[in-house]
Amino acid sequence: MLNEQHQLIELSPNIPSYQIDSSKNAIGIDLGTEYCYAGQYIHHDGKNYVKILKIGGNGRDKLWSGVAFEGKTIHVGEAAKYELSIRKQEKRPLNGAFRIREITGTKFEKVNKRSLDYNIACDEIGRIAIVITDADPTKNGTLVPEEINNIFVQSIIQDLTTVYNFQPTNIIITQSDKMKEIDTVITYGIFKQANTNIDRVIKDCEAAICAYGLAVPLNNYIIFYFGEADSWATLVQNGRITSHVRNGICGLLMDTMNRQLKGKEFAEKSKKLANTLGEMIPILAKSCGNEVDGIILAGSDIHRPMIQGTVAPWRNKFIVYDSIPTEKVIVVGATVISAKRLHDQIQNNPLDGVIREMAQLSRNLSLYNRDTSSEVFQPPPTYESIVNTNRERAPTGTPPIELNSPREQMAPQSPNWNIHDSTQAADSESQNEEDGRMVLEITRL
Image 1 (cartoon, rainbow, N blue to C red):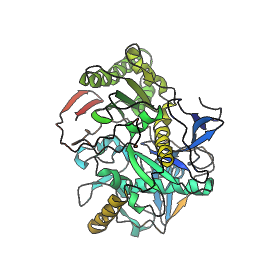
Image 2: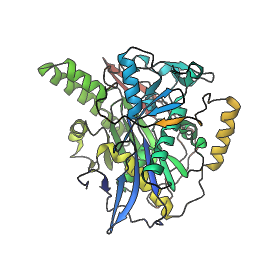
Image 3: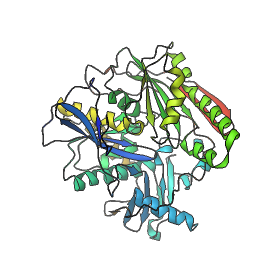
Image 4: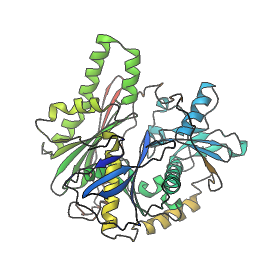
């Protein structure tokens, strides 16, 4: 399925071939907690592929989710990682942040600040703001995650334009399953993207289902994600998110345990954590009467064996989809949706009206206090000896998920997707189970 360079991912036969004008490009972007990916739809020799594009500099296929500021220079990706690691080693204030998505869309009072290596504050309208200590004192202040995510999008689009010499024609961006409807536009600052064809924002779970070309109406799927910063599982019934579980067990915690524990103690603790992690599946399965049509695996490629081992007990009962590299499932699905919409010639950009409305709201509330229009992106360093700043402290828990209402269905308009829109309020209940460093949080809609 994957070539030797891990650049082309062959799509499932369930996904039809989409005829796209050769002058147009269908692009999917996954804005992840740890890394960002971009993919392009390719039809070649009767087969369909998603090409994982190089957007991280120096031939990398992923952009590390970090940003740092120095005067009029914005360090993005590996360049930011290097800048932040040097400052951390020298015990200087950080001039940026990383793993932004970990706190995006979360209330300030619900954030576990001990799990963060950068300072945060609460802005004038109650959102999380990251404290920036700039080389230029006049630029000291705060920056909201929404604006930083916007910088990631700008950087990715710039790479696509300069490296591949093409203007992306149709772009689909993913957002976390925990986000509410109104965060869809605000979170990624889409209204600040001039002259780009960002079509719409979809949920991670939607992208995961589309990556395998699965039928949605009357089907139930569990998307199981094990990441570096957090783990979660989402139940999608008939195309709608109905339950979401988040767990504090993650790659960062497992790596820290691996360094601190040895032998039998490590094995026993790992088994206990794996069992707790696996509890997300029966919790969601029970809520749909154990009528699960498939479990889709996503998350860190490094910890792929951990993901597969956790769901192993359920393989005899449910179909497990794991043929696509877990770290690239979401970007593959986003790219498939982009290709589908280009094929159907859906060019009216349905978010335009909302974008204009949010742009006016932004100006009225002065949400963005840093003008990045005159700043330039700094390319990443040309060497790989970069200190890893992300694995020195294990999280002691994660903030609770809040999904107050079912969001408007934003899936592609095709027979394989349920296009029923629901605006009815839903009851939600939360359940917390704590075991030391573990946090299991459940939200039902």
